[in-house]
Amino acid sequence: MAKKITAKVPKRKLETVRERTEQTNNAKPKSRIVARSARAASTPFRFVGRLIARIARPFRFLLRPFKTRPVRFVGRVLSRVLLLRYFRDSWKELRLVTWPDRKETRQLTLAVFAFAIVFGLMVTVTDYGLDKVFKKLILK
Image (cartoon, rainbow, N blue to C red; front, top):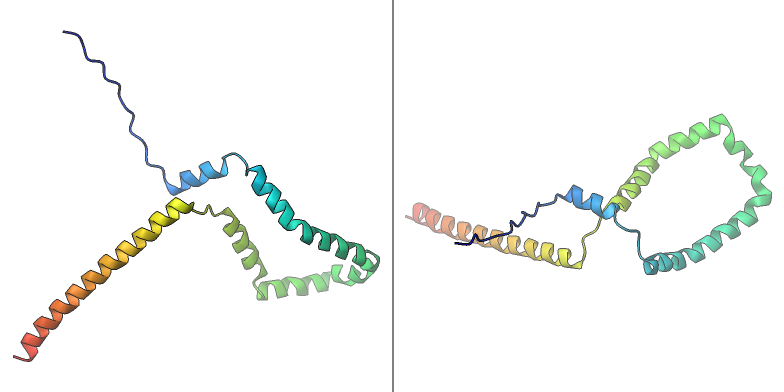
């Protein structure tokens, strides 16, 4: 009898969200189309920034008082009171988020709807059952 040769199929390892995030961060850079459209979208802002810098250049001497120690201290206190560091750090964290694609979003949305329907049915059945039990006990 001849031996049957069977190939072993390796089990696919389930990846965690962290591993998927690292893979996406290490993936190839954004496509040229995305980079080009981002560059085009930021062009007006760069123009305005350069224009403001050119206009403000002769008035740099007005900034000298703001470089002194007491004024910097007041600026630090104001930034703490207004929570500027919190907003800056929040923005940095938000940029690190990897957003789900269209297919994953659809699946997660359907999962939420299914859970809400099942949970609603459970609450409805429980409420109906308890209503019947208490009406028999109290109105007896």
